[in-house]
Amino acid sequence: MEKKWWHGKTAYQIYPKSFYDSNGDGIGDLPGIISKLDYLKELGADIIWLSPIYVSPLADEGYDIADYYAIDPRFGTMDDLDRLIDEAHKRGQYIIMDLVVNHCSDEHEWFKKACDDPEGKYGKYFFIEKTNDPKSLCNWRSYFGGSVWEKLPGHDDYYYLHLFHKKQPDLNWENPEMREDIYRMVNWWLDKGIDGFRLDAIINIKKGPFVNYPPDRDDGLVRATRQLEDARGIGEFLGELRDRCFAPHKAFTVGEVFNLRDDEIKDFIGGNGYFSSMFDFTPTIFGQDDRGWQYFKDVTPDDYKHCVFKGQKEYDDIGFVSNLIENHDEPRGVSRYIPEGDQSPTSKKMLAALYFLTKGLPWIYQGQELGMENVKLKSIDQVDDISSIDAYKVAIADGFSEADALHLIEKHGRDNARTPFQWNAEANAGFTTGKPWLAPNPNYTEINLSAEEADTDSVLNFYKKLIQLRKNPEYSEIFVYGDFSPYLPDVHNCFAYTRSNGGRTILVIANYQNEKKTYPLLGTVKKVLLTNTGAVNSDSDSITLDGYQVVVAEI
Image 1 (spheres, rainbow, N blue to C red):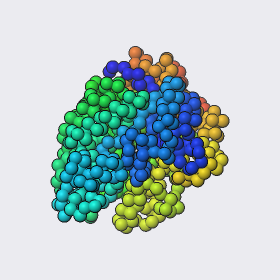
Image 2: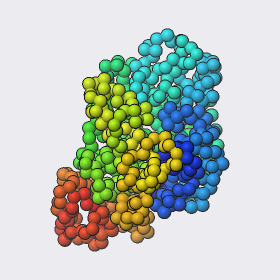
Image 3: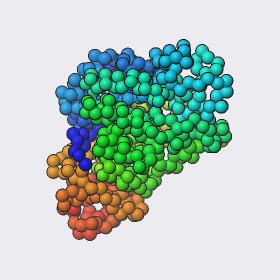
C-alpha cells in the first residue's frame, strides 16, 4: 500500500449547529469552531470534517442545499470560513467539507427553474416524469417514509423523484450538463483552499431501473435500497468526479458508502480508487431491519466484535478504511455498543481502544471523546429528527405503545448525536448563552469537557493517550500499517486482536463484560502500553482482566 500523508492522522467530525455558539442565537457557528481549534489541536485532531454549512432551509438539517456557493447566515459568512481554513492550516490541521450531490433542496435555483419549465434545461437536472398516476412510475419508499414520487409544485401532471425528504429532489447524474455544474462547484471549493470532502449518500447517484419490486410493508412500497441492488455503472460518474476534481487537487476524500458489493471495494478505495477512504459501516448496519426500527436487534459484544473483524478482513490490503463508532446520523456509540446500563468511564474507554487501534483511519465525532450518551425522552415533541419522527409513527402503526415507540427513538434516533457539545456544567452545557436549538442532554452536569480536563482518569484524557500512542514514532508503523489478526475470536465476550509489523506484535485485549475473566496469552507481556484501569494482572501464559478492562501491550 502506498503511504499517504493522512494515514497516521486522527480525524474529527464537527456538527456545526451543535458545536459552539459564539453569538448567543442558540445555533453553533463558524466563529465558534475557530475559537475551539486550540482545543482540537490539543486533543490531537488533524482532519476536521464540517457537516453542511451551506444555505439551506434545514428540512434535513443542512443536507438539503439551496446554494452550493454560499454559507448559511446561521453559521456565519464566507469570510468566517476563509478564516477557519487559514487558522486550521496554521495549526497543521485540514478542513474538509460535506459534499451533498445526490440531491439538493427544492429551494435551489435549479429546481425552481425546473418547476417553471419541466421539459426545459433544468427539468433534465432532475428525475421528472409526466403522469397522472405516480403509482405507475415505481413503488419505492423514501428513506424518510412515503413514496419517492412527489407532485411537482405548480403542476398536476408532473412528479419528481426524491429518495430522501420531499424537499430533497434527486439530481440526475445521467445528464452530463448537470455533472459539469457539479464539477465546477467542487473545483471552486478546492481552489478556495479546503482540503477535501466527505461524500454524502454517494452510492445513490446511480439509480437502478425504475420498476416495481415486491412490497416489504403493508403500504405497498419497498425500501429505496432495493433498487441499488440492480444499479450498475456508478464508476462512470465517480471516476469522472475523481479525475476532474479530486485528483488534480490531491484532495482527501472519504465516502459514505452503503450497499457496496464486495467486488467493488477496490474500485472505491484501491490504488486508483474513486476516494481516498470510505467508512466501514459493518457494525453500523448490523441488526437493522427494513420493516422498521421496532425490529432492529441490539448489538451484543460478540456481534460487535465479529462485525469489526469482518470489516477488517474485507478491507485489508485493498485500501485504507475509515473507522468510527458514531456520527451525526447514528446514536451514540457508547449507548449502542455497550450493553444498556453498563455505560461507565471504564467501559467507554474500553470501547474507545478497541475501535481506535484497528487498521485504518480513526474518526472521532464531537462529544465522543467525552463519552456523551443517548438522551432519555419524555415525549416525541422533544424530537427534531425527521427520520426518528417517521420511525415513531411506523412503530405506533405497528401496534407499539407510545412508551415503547419512544424508547426506540432513544436507542436509534439521530438527535442523540445532535444535542449540543457539553463544554461545562453551566447553563446549556456552556454551548450557548441563548436558547439552544436542541436541548442538551441533561447529564451534561456530570459529563462535560471542563470536568474531564481536570480528571486525569477521564474518558477525554484516555482518548488523548490513544491518539498519542498511535502517533508515537516507536509504535506508529505498527498501528498505522501493521497486520491485523483476530485473537480468541470465538471466546464469548472477549474482544482481542493483534497488530504486527517488523517482527513486533502488540496485543489489544478486552474483557467485554462486568465479570472478571482470565484469558490465555500468546506470549509474555513485554510492556503495557495502555490500560483503562489501574493494574494489569498477567503471567507468562495468561492475563486476568477486570470487568470491561482493556489492555494494550507489546508481547
